[in-house]
Length: 230
Image (tube, rainbow, N blue to C red):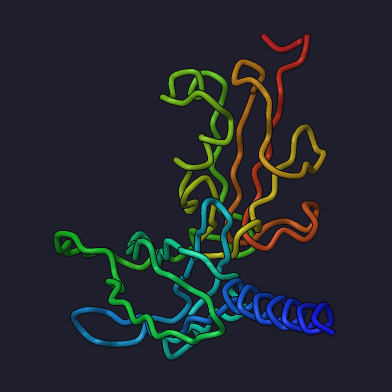
Protein backbone atom coordinates (compact mmCIF):
# COMPACT_ATOMS: atom_id res chain seq x y z
CA UNK A 1 0.00 0.00 0.00
CA UNK A 2 2.83 2.32 0.93
CA UNK A 3 4.63 1.60 -2.34
CA UNK A 4 1.45 2.32 -4.29
CA UNK A 5 1.12 5.75 -2.66
CA UNK A 6 4.76 6.52 -3.41
CA UNK A 7 4.19 5.56 -7.04
CA UNK A 8 1.15 7.85 -7.28
CA UNK A 9 3.14 10.74 -5.80
CA UNK A 10 5.99 10.17 -8.28
CA UNK A 11 3.57 10.03 -11.22
CA UNK A 12 1.88 13.28 -10.17
CA UNK A 13 5.24 14.99 -9.67
CA UNK A 14 6.41 13.84 -13.10
CA UNK A 15 3.20 15.09 -14.71
CA UNK A 16 3.59 18.50 -13.06
CA UNK A 17 7.23 18.76 -14.14
CA UNK A 18 6.32 17.87 -17.72
CA UNK A 19 3.68 20.65 -17.80
CA UNK A 20 6.15 23.15 -16.32
CA UNK A 21 8.84 22.10 -18.81
CA UNK A 22 6.46 22.38 -21.78
CA UNK A 23 5.28 25.78 -20.60
CA UNK A 24 8.85 27.02 -20.22
CA UNK A 25 9.72 25.96 -23.76
CA UNK A 26 6.49 27.09 -25.43
CA UNK A 27 6.67 29.79 -28.07
CA UNK A 28 5.05 33.19 -28.21
CA UNK A 29 4.08 36.04 -30.50
CA UNK A 30 5.14 39.63 -31.01
CA UNK A 31 3.06 42.33 -32.65
CA UNK A 32 3.59 46.02 -33.16
CA UNK A 33 3.67 48.95 -35.53
CA UNK A 34 6.56 50.57 -37.40
CA UNK A 35 6.21 54.34 -37.85
CA UNK A 36 8.26 57.29 -39.01
CA UNK A 37 9.65 59.21 -36.00
CA UNK A 38 8.96 62.63 -37.54
CA UNK A 39 5.65 62.27 -39.41
CA UNK A 40 4.28 59.41 -37.23
CA UNK A 41 3.03 57.82 -40.44
CA UNK A 42 2.98 54.00 -40.63
CA UNK A 43 5.64 52.33 -42.77
CA UNK A 44 4.34 49.59 -45.07
CA UNK A 45 6.53 46.74 -46.38
CA UNK A 46 9.21 47.19 -43.72
CA UNK A 47 11.21 44.02 -43.01
CA UNK A 48 11.24 42.62 -39.45
CA UNK A 49 13.92 40.02 -38.65
CA UNK A 50 13.98 37.96 -35.44
CA UNK A 51 17.45 36.47 -34.86
CA UNK A 52 18.28 33.92 -32.14
CA UNK A 53 21.90 32.77 -32.38
CA UNK A 54 21.81 32.83 -36.18
CA UNK A 55 18.35 31.27 -36.54
CA UNK A 56 16.25 33.90 -38.30
CA UNK A 57 12.53 34.48 -38.82
CA UNK A 58 11.51 37.22 -41.28
CA UNK A 59 8.21 39.14 -41.35
CA UNK A 60 6.85 42.26 -43.11
CA UNK A 61 4.57 45.11 -42.10
CA UNK A 62 1.19 45.57 -43.79
CA UNK A 63 -0.20 48.73 -45.39
CA UNK A 64 -0.85 50.21 -41.94
CA UNK A 65 2.66 49.50 -40.66
CA UNK A 66 1.59 46.59 -38.43
CA UNK A 67 3.33 43.22 -38.19
CA UNK A 68 2.37 40.06 -36.35
CA UNK A 69 5.11 37.52 -35.66
CA UNK A 70 3.39 34.35 -34.46
CA UNK A 71 4.60 30.94 -33.30
CA UNK A 72 8.09 32.15 -32.42
CA UNK A 73 10.06 29.54 -30.45
CA UNK A 74 10.89 30.61 -26.89
CA UNK A 75 14.23 32.39 -26.62
CA UNK A 76 16.11 35.67 -26.56
CA UNK A 77 16.08 37.44 -29.92
CA UNK A 78 17.78 40.37 -31.58
CA UNK A 79 15.03 42.14 -33.57
CA UNK A 80 16.06 44.18 -36.63
CA UNK A 81 13.73 46.53 -38.54
CA UNK A 82 14.70 47.54 -42.09
CA UNK A 83 13.26 49.95 -44.64
CA UNK A 84 15.23 51.21 -47.64
CA UNK A 85 18.73 51.97 -46.30
CA UNK A 86 17.54 52.57 -42.72
CA UNK A 87 17.85 49.99 -39.96
CA UNK A 88 17.00 49.84 -36.24
CA UNK A 89 17.95 46.93 -33.95
CA UNK A 90 16.32 46.04 -30.63
CA UNK A 91 18.75 43.71 -28.79
CA UNK A 92 17.91 40.87 -26.40
CA UNK A 93 14.12 40.81 -26.61
CA UNK A 94 12.67 37.75 -24.85
CA UNK A 95 9.85 35.84 -26.56
CA UNK A 96 7.96 32.81 -25.23
CA UNK A 97 5.50 31.31 -22.75
CA UNK A 98 2.52 31.62 -25.12
CA UNK A 99 2.35 35.38 -24.64
CA UNK A 100 1.70 38.08 -27.22
CA UNK A 101 3.94 41.07 -26.60
CA UNK A 102 3.80 44.58 -28.04
CA UNK A 103 6.92 46.01 -29.67
CA UNK A 104 6.48 49.31 -31.55
CA UNK A 105 9.46 50.90 -33.31
CA UNK A 106 10.24 54.23 -34.95
CA UNK A 107 12.15 53.94 -38.22
CA UNK A 108 12.92 56.77 -40.68
CA UNK A 109 10.84 56.37 -43.83
CA UNK A 110 13.24 58.11 -46.19
CA UNK A 111 16.97 58.50 -46.68
CA UNK A 112 18.19 61.80 -45.30
CA UNK A 113 20.62 63.98 -47.19
CA UNK A 114 21.22 67.38 -48.70
CA UNK A 115 18.48 68.85 -50.87
CA UNK A 116 19.29 68.78 -54.59
CA UNK A 117 17.48 70.86 -57.17
CA UNK A 118 17.34 69.30 -60.62
CA UNK A 119 16.07 71.01 -63.75
CA UNK A 120 15.85 69.25 -67.10
CA UNK A 121 13.71 68.86 -70.18
CA UNK A 122 11.74 65.68 -70.79
CA UNK A 123 13.46 63.39 -73.24
CA UNK A 124 11.38 62.63 -76.34
CA UNK A 125 12.58 59.01 -76.15
CA UNK A 126 12.17 56.73 -73.14
CA UNK A 127 15.60 56.16 -71.60
CA UNK A 128 14.54 53.12 -69.55
CA UNK A 129 12.90 50.00 -70.87
CA UNK A 130 10.64 48.72 -68.04
CA UNK A 131 10.98 45.16 -69.37
CA UNK A 132 14.76 45.10 -68.94
CA UNK A 133 16.25 43.97 -65.63
CA UNK A 134 18.58 46.24 -63.71
CA UNK A 135 21.93 44.64 -64.46
CA UNK A 136 25.28 45.41 -62.86
CA UNK A 137 28.37 43.65 -64.23
CA UNK A 138 31.80 43.26 -62.63
CA UNK A 139 34.66 41.86 -64.70
CA UNK A 140 37.67 39.90 -63.46
CA UNK A 141 39.97 42.92 -63.26
CA UNK A 142 37.47 44.89 -61.16
CA UNK A 143 36.84 41.95 -58.83
CA UNK A 144 40.59 41.52 -58.31
CA UNK A 145 40.85 45.05 -56.86
CA UNK A 146 37.89 44.71 -54.45
CA UNK A 147 38.59 44.51 -50.66
CA UNK A 148 36.95 41.09 -50.33
CA UNK A 149 38.02 37.52 -49.62
CA UNK A 150 35.00 35.43 -50.65
CA UNK A 151 32.58 35.40 -53.59
CA UNK A 152 29.43 36.01 -51.55
CA UNK A 153 30.90 39.26 -50.21
CA UNK A 154 30.58 40.74 -53.70
CA UNK A 155 26.78 40.66 -53.42
CA UNK A 156 26.92 42.86 -50.30
CA UNK A 157 28.37 45.78 -52.30
CA UNK A 158 26.05 45.44 -55.27
CA UNK A 159 23.26 48.04 -55.86
CA UNK A 160 19.87 47.01 -54.47
CA UNK A 161 21.24 44.23 -52.23
CA UNK A 162 21.49 44.57 -48.44
CA UNK A 163 23.43 42.22 -46.15
CA UNK A 164 22.23 41.54 -42.58
CA UNK A 165 24.11 38.99 -40.46
CA UNK A 166 25.25 37.02 -43.48
CA UNK A 167 21.81 37.01 -45.17
CA UNK A 168 21.17 38.96 -48.40
CA UNK A 169 17.95 40.86 -49.12
CA UNK A 170 17.07 42.30 -52.55
CA UNK A 171 15.12 45.56 -52.28
CA UNK A 172 13.21 44.42 -49.20
CA UNK A 173 12.30 40.97 -50.53
CA UNK A 174 12.17 37.94 -48.27
CA UNK A 175 15.11 35.87 -47.13
CA UNK A 176 16.27 33.35 -49.71
CA UNK A 177 14.89 35.25 -52.71
CA UNK A 178 18.39 35.83 -54.15
CA UNK A 179 19.32 33.01 -56.55
CA UNK A 180 22.81 32.07 -57.75
CA UNK A 181 23.71 30.67 -61.17
CA UNK A 182 27.20 29.41 -62.03
CA UNK A 183 27.89 28.88 -65.73
CA UNK A 184 24.14 28.62 -66.35
CA UNK A 185 23.37 26.16 -63.53
CA UNK A 186 21.35 27.16 -60.47
CA UNK A 187 22.94 26.25 -57.14
CA UNK A 188 21.62 26.01 -53.59
CA UNK A 189 23.05 28.47 -51.07
CA UNK A 190 26.02 30.77 -51.65
CA UNK A 191 28.74 29.95 -54.22
CA UNK A 192 31.89 28.37 -52.82
CA UNK A 193 34.46 29.05 -55.52
CA UNK A 194 37.79 30.94 -55.34
CA UNK A 195 37.90 34.57 -56.46
CA UNK A 196 40.62 33.73 -58.97
CA UNK A 197 38.12 31.50 -60.77
CA UNK A 198 35.70 34.33 -61.63
CA UNK A 199 35.43 35.83 -65.08
CA UNK A 200 32.28 37.98 -64.61
CA UNK A 201 29.84 38.62 -61.76
CA UNK A 202 26.42 39.92 -62.82
CA UNK A 203 23.55 40.94 -60.55
CA UNK A 204 19.97 41.39 -61.78
CA UNK A 205 17.40 43.08 -59.55
CA UNK A 206 13.84 44.13 -60.20
CA UNK A 207 12.47 42.39 -63.31
CA UNK A 208 14.25 39.06 -63.87
CA UNK A 209 14.09 37.21 -67.22
CA UNK A 210 12.01 34.02 -67.31
CA UNK A 211 15.12 31.97 -68.16
CA UNK A 212 16.09 32.21 -64.49
CA UNK A 213 12.96 30.46 -63.28
CA UNK A 214 11.14 31.34 -60.08
CA UNK A 215 13.51 34.00 -58.72
CA UNK A 216 11.36 36.53 -56.87
CA UNK A 217 14.01 38.96 -55.65
CA UNK A 218 17.15 38.95 -57.74
CA UNK A 219 19.69 36.80 -59.54
CA UNK A 220 23.48 36.55 -59.37
CA UNK A 221 24.97 35.11 -62.56
CA UNK A 222 28.59 33.98 -62.32
CA UNK A 223 30.75 33.03 -65.30
CA UNK A 224 33.94 31.20 -64.39
CA UNK A 225 37.28 31.27 -66.17
CA UNK A 226 38.06 28.50 -68.61
CA UNK A 227 41.26 27.15 -70.08
CA UNK A 228 40.89 29.51 -73.02
CA UNK A 229 40.31 32.62 -70.88
CA UNK A 230 43.24 34.97 -70.60
